[in-house]
Every structure is written in structure tokens, then in C-alpha cells.
Amino acid sequence: MPARAVEPVANLWFTWRYVENNLGDITTALSQHVTLTVQAVVLALVVALPLAVLAHRRPRLAGPVLGASGVLYTVPALALFAMIYPLLWDPRTTVLIGLVMYALLVLVRNVLVGLQGVDRGVVDAARGTGIGPTRLLLTVELPLAIPSIFAGLRLATVSTVALVTIGIIVGYGGLGQLLYRGFNSQYRAEIATATVLTLLVALVADLLLMALGRALTPWARGGR
Image (cartoon, rainbow, N blue to C red; front, side, top):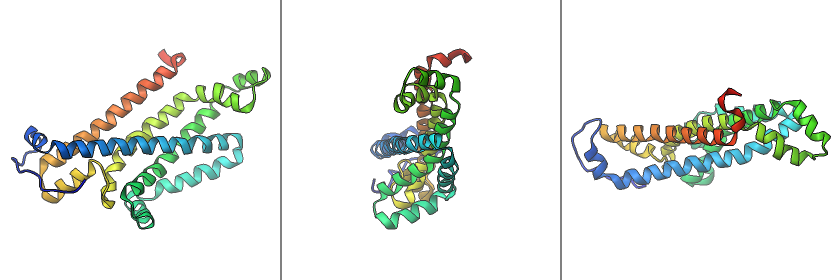
């Protein structure tokens, strides 16, 4: 979204007139923010699931898998985006790859914990009926690991919503573009609006994932 001069209104922290005058910019930034978040979390989950399953099936690999994802997580976001961008020269892809890398540790760890927490008696009983490894994973282990998986999804999603804003250092940061422009111009309404919208995106995403997780685990309701 190209930067442009904000139509001047009173420099208040909250003003509806700012939203009315700049609705196009706000909608574009919000759409970009949500799209990046969803794509990053989905891609991270696609990568994390097989890594966690591999670590579960081969316990000796659990340490290296978690260690590698942990190293990626410790790299500062500003440095990570700055290192990736010169290799791709594509702001959107740079931010997306960085977000996926940050979400990996949380997702791999939670999926692995969920799989390890499945009752071994249930697994042995399923194997006793002749179920193969793939069917066992898809019909027994992963469904029972859903609470842990969704706990990781919620944490990864909320942190990704916040990290999207840092993408502005390479020119693609969703609501971070409004924050950056507001800080440069010291325009309070722009800063406050972008901040509130970022918080709302995180809250709505967290509530939706919580509801979906509960819907997929009816046996876990009521603390049973």
C-alpha cells in the first residue's frame, strides 16, 4: 500500500473522522494483515505437522527438530526480515517466510506434546485391531492431540498478528504501515486506530480458534 498524506483532522488519539477520511487505506492494511496472518499460520502448520510426527515416531530426532526451530525463533524479527529480503527482493514473500519460521517452534512443540500425551493404552488397543501406522495417526493420535494442537495454533496466531506489523521494515506490514506512518507524522489517531485494530484481529482470531477447538473436541467439554 503506497504511503500518502493523511487528510488532516484534529490530532486526537481517537477520532471517527480519521476513519471516515481514510477508510480505503485502513481497509487495505487490515485485509493485508489478516491475509498474511492466515497464510503464515496455515503454512507453518503444514510444515510443523510432519516434523512433529517425525519427532514422535523417531524420538532421537525430537531434540534436533525442536532445537532447529528454537534457533529460528530466537533471531530478532528485524534482523530476520532484513536478512531474508536481499535474497528475494520481494517484500510480501520475505514477511511470509519470516512469519512461518517464527510460528514453527510453537506449533511443532505443541503438536509433539499432544501426540506424546495420547494414552498409550488407547494406541495399543487400536494397534490390536490391526490398524496401520497411518490410519492410527489420522484416526486416533491426531484427534486426541487436538486440544494441544489448538493451544499451539492460538498462541502462534496471536504472536503472528503482532509480528506482521514489523514487516513494514521491508515495506509490507499490514496495519504496521499505518503505525509507521503515524509515528513519522506524530499523528495520534493513525497510531491508535492501527493499534486497536491489531488487538481486535488477535482477539477475534483467538476466539474463533478456541470455538473451533471446542467444536472438534466434544469429549473434552466440561473438564471431562
